[in-house]
Image 1 (tube, rainbow, N blue to C red):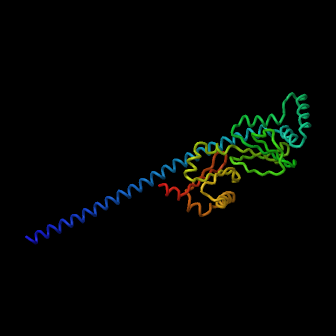
Image 2: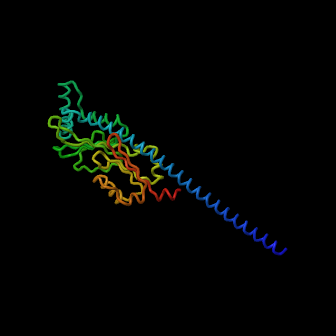
Image 3: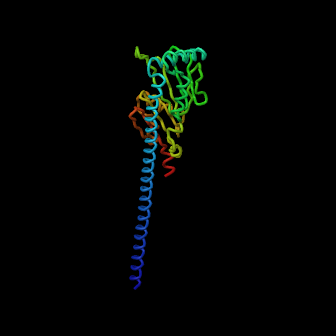
Length: 274
C-alpha cells in the first residue's frame, strides 16, 4: 500500500512537472508570437509611413520642377527677356523705367521686370525667394515676398529653408551659360501634413538634383557632420557611410525629374517605439 501511494505521488509530480513545462512553453511561444507580430506590424506601419512621405516629396519635387520651368520661361525664355533682365540688374531704376516706356512705345508690349517678378509670387503661393545672378553683372538680385521688386546683394549667401531649384540662364545665340536663377519653394510644402509623421519617426529627408547636389534637407536624427558626410557620398556617387546602414532604415528613389529622394529612419527610435 505504501508503495502504491509512493508511485501515485511520483506520477502526480511527473504530471505536474510536464504540465509546468507545457505551460511555460505555451507562455514563451505566445510571448514570442506577440513579439514577432508586434515587430511585423511596426515594420509594416513604418513601410506605409515611409511610402507616404516618399510619395509626398516626389509629388512636390516634380510639381515644383514644372513650376521652375515656367518661371524660367517667364524670366529668361528668350534673348529679349534675358536682355530685359540684365537691364533691370544694371541700370538705375529711373533709367530702367524709361527703357520700359520706350520699349512699350515701340512694341506695345509691357516688359516691366517688376511686374514679371510680382506675377511670379502671385502665381506660385509657395514660392518664397528668387535669386538671379548673371556672369557679367557684379550684384545678385534677391526677391522675396517682402521685397518682390528685389534687392541687389553683393554676395550670394543662400540660407533659405525649403526646396531650392536652379536653372542656368542661356545665351540663345551661343548656347553658353551666362547666369543662374534659383527658386526657393516653401519648406512646409515639401512634407505638407506628413511633417509631424517624419518628426515622430526622427526621419532625415534629403532631396538631390540631377547633378546630385542637395536641394532640400531635413536633418532628423543626423548630426550636421553626419548629414554632410551623407551629402558628400551622394555627390561623389560613393556608398553611403557605414553608420547609415548600421543606424538607419534606408529608402531612396529617383523621380521622373531626376531628383533623388533619400529617407533615413532611426533604427534606435523604431525599436524603442516598438
